[in-house]
Length: 255
Length: 259
Image (cartoon, rainbow over all chains, first blue to last red; front, side, top):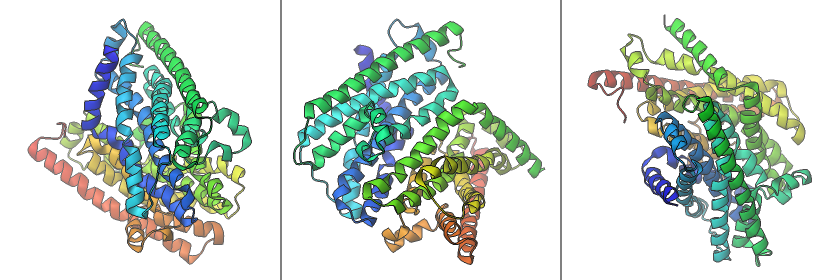
């Protein structure tokens, strides 16, 4: 726990002071304008919640994937990967601590997107179920951190794996229904999309804003948590295997 | 001499890019991401119930993918500073521009090539129609138009390396948001459209859409010409930026110091 908190505190300070960690959140207003321009052109103010949530989710998922890779890259350049490999506790713990701090900061994308909608298109987003929204955001954010760990482990394996880190973004956002709900996509992708925590999370976040009643709340929260836990288990195991491999082969700083 | 420097730098850039990918990591990593990104935005048409929007956004995002790749020369150049090779380049008697311009020229080829690959992979799913033989030259015009702004970001990022990625993303998403990629620019107020006219991609994409629907017309040529003019203007500004950076750095000895 102390290693998690140490990583969390350190990243919180770094996240506030380092411009490269602001990258994803600073693009939120432009992306909000993009989505809002589409619903405005087609005169669909009923989709405002979709247009406001999508850029925030894009920013948050981008932040989790980007931060995971950046942490490993910086640790490699600073020759700290060797020290992490030599310690008896898992490298995953401080990495998750640091990613949690970044995701906490990236939650600011939601008020930022709402403010952009109000300032640029004069659109207001009223939240019907604020407690459901809060719960959905907490579990979805936790699942983002957990799942992004899978892609972080690849960055340890090879510096060329930044390509795979990049590839984690839009396939997950598309199948996770970040803007267009999974149910509207072709039927054959539904089974794949439902294995991704984000499809449950984004549906729930949108329902918390627009639906008169939120159905199956506990089931849906549970699915986000369950799939997030599966991502955490897979990510932790992968990271341990990869750290072991690069340590044994002696490629830890040159992979 | 300048051309030889640029040619050698281009060879280094090509080799560098090749070393970043295997064909598997390129296809199942980067191309997969670009395909998903294009589908992500094209799918907006499903949400608003418009097949026309699906096709409009598909073409827009194929073209935007070219700009994404070419503007990437900005943050890539900033890495030069962190790798410690910059003082050697500054000490050399020639301008920095042929080195960086040559080094990054492969981004143009890669951007256009990937744009075509994405189109070939995604278009059959959407069922688009048009004069698609005009796609390669129009994408090349967009790549050239974006190159000047990419170099300008590079000139900025080399001064402020920690800001390189952030500025790159801000410029790219602003261009996509107001540049007529996913929806016609007429949805925005006049002054936003005017600002967009100074960005790359905007005129090139208008020209591309005209070529696809009506073939080789004066309007299409005019828009592609404007795209190249915008690129040339940003290239000139980048030229001044690189000159200022190298002169200032030589004078006050801050080339290798963190911002």
